[in-house]
Image (cartoon, rainbow, N blue to C red):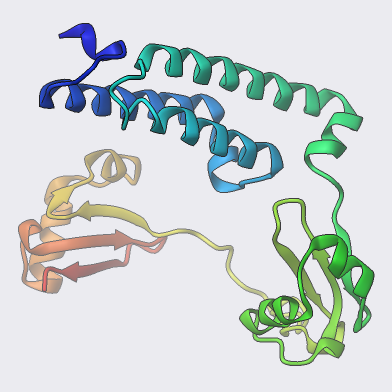
Length: 235
């Protein structure tokens, strides 16, 4: 059965399935080692790694003549090389600038930097599209638009066009607090309840007296800092 690791003239259905299972969980382990940075922000080095790893694992999962062991060794070496380069880039400024170059302006004070558009390898149409996504219809409203190292554009509006906030009007507001989930899909979140100093009986009383439902009827229930319970029922 372990022959599925090595190259074969042909593989049985079970051996193909085992290759897929091993390859999947090995990729999960690789992604975990690489960290959330490589998943949430696909930067230059992350993009190179994604191409290499995808290409390496794809061949033995589709060609019985290639062994899985060699691909896993290659991927492991690449991941440790990647982690080493990430660590060195944190310590060595020149290497950091290579993998994560400093942002540069595409728009400043309503003026478009045409040369920097060429540097970012984007057209004016792409730039205008990004502005429209941010509900900005006029380039003159933009104080600064930066091309980031991950290929995204950070846009800052000029002061007269920024949304007025409570602090601008000197209005006092309560600190933000995130409501806590106490029921999910008909199951009570006991740990959250205990952290809030509540128990199951208190929750059942709230559901019965305020909403005339039971826990099993509730898709989601949340509680805010003032102990106000909000529920969402199964539809």
